[in-house]
Image 1 (cartoon, rainbow, N blue to C red):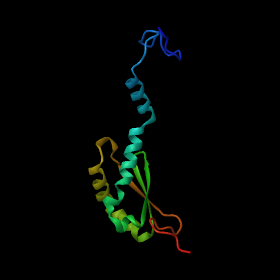
Image 2 (cartoon, rainbow, N blue to C red; image 1 turned 180 degrees about the horizontal axis):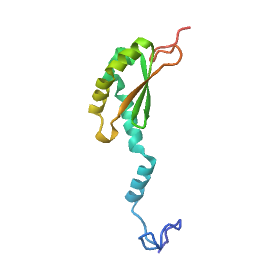
Image 3 (spheres, rainbow, N blue to C red; image 1 turned 120 degrees about the vertical axis):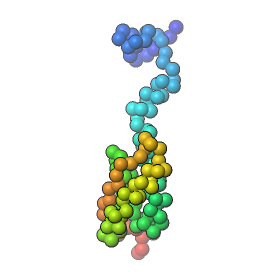
Image 4 (cartoon, helix red, strand yellow; image 1 turned 90 degrees about the horizontal axis):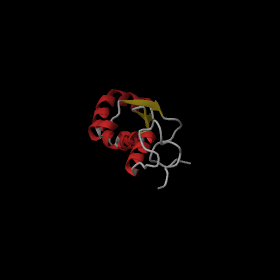
Length: 125
């Protein structure tokens, strides 16, 4: 019989020394520690931005990601910032309707876009 490595088994662990843990249990624990479900949910939320706002707004914004359940969006121009501030609640609702319950976002944070860059367009020279 081969002993389990790592010294994590034995007295106080609830398992007999030399026993093996099923791979599924090990992977479940690893996935929970890596928090991949939250990362996938964040990617899903950012991927839903354009569908929720339409091409006109998506062309003047850039979805940066999700941090602690907040979708961070860079916005080009004060007029679009004001427009999105008014629409934030409806956009949040539209995005969350398409997300799994555990991956829903709780807020949208709008920040000014740096520089003169327009998403999806080549820079002019």
